[in-house]
Amino acid sequence: MPIDLSLRPFGQTGLTVHPICVGCAALGDMPETFAYSVSNEDAYATVRAAFGSSINFIDTANIYGWGESERRIGVVIRERGGLPPGHILATKADRDKDTNRFDGDQARRSIEESLSRLGLDHLQIVYLHDPEYAPWDEIVGRGGALDVLRRYREQGVIGHLGLAGGPIDVMLRYLDLGGFECVISHNRYTLLNREAEPLIAACHARGIPMVNAAPYGSGMLSKGPSVYPRYMYRDAAPDLVRRAFAVEAVCQRRGVPLAAAALQFSLRDRRIASTIVGMTKPERLAQTLALAAQPLPGNIWAELDAAAE
Ligand SMILES: NC(=O)c1ccc[n+]([C@@H]2O[C@H](COP(=O)([O-])OP(=O)(O)OC[C@H]3O[C@@H](n4cnc5c(N)ncnc54)[C@H](OP(=O)(O)O)[C@@H]3O)[C@@H](O)[C@H]2O)c1
Image (cartoon, rainbow, N blue to C red; front, side, top):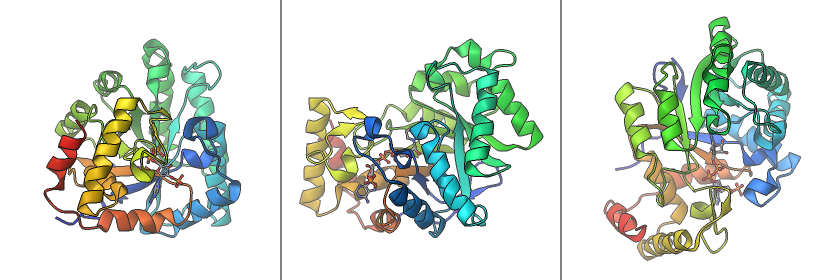
């Protein structure tokens, strides 16, 4: 079955998004995380390409590159005189980068910084980001980060409030609080990792749109394990590299790019509203659309599952 690349409603938000979202973490120049640097010019060119593409969804965070990702996106937004019509930008409210503190004051600081860097007076989607790094009470207690974000939503500064983070048990605990309109999980629903399955099921059952970030595990499943033997921002364990080579061998035997299988693994799952693909070069937009449209043999998935064991 060909992948449906049409825009779709984003849960109950009233927004309409593409099934692919442009991920802008590495655009913030984070060599300690991605093991390579990204210049201003590559970043601007990538954002310009995103704003000129049929992919109308772009994802960043206050903390990416300590603000550099938002700053660079803001340069292109200002250049265009605002977000292109129909384009949806999501950012994330973050803890203090030095202390990990994530109280109400920090949430306020995070939102004000995002507005100023992006040059916007309204943020369409803001996720509570990586709550696993701060104490529960600091975020959830009276006057904490969550209260402040909810107030921004009531005031209309934030359009929609989401939840984004890593460990699935932490994510499920936050999800149970209610009130989140969308959810991001990352690196945990790929050809090599299925840990996010309970979170995806919980979001699906509640009608909350689930956004799957990092379908390439941060690059090993796009560039290949011989070129980029890293997964989730660190060197991959030997067994994971072995499994990646096994998956790549299936793709080679079937004559399909590894990246096409990795991307379509996420896109073909109807429970996933959008898949966030990280990219730092303008040509990635067209490449990603081509990988999504590449016909794959329908019976490849069982073989890939077996190879990934
Ligand atoms: N907690 C959270 O909410 C959270 C966590 C993680 C990620 N995210 C979001 O999800 C996004 C995606 O995650 P990610 O960037 O970490 O990982 P990813 O999407 O799994 O992989 C990105 C890597 O794949 C490469 N790539 C992309 N398209 C390619 C192509 N056509 N050919 C070859 N290589 C290709 C990129 O290379 P180039 O740089 O060379 O283009 C980059 O190295 C992030 O940018 C961020 O927006 C959110």
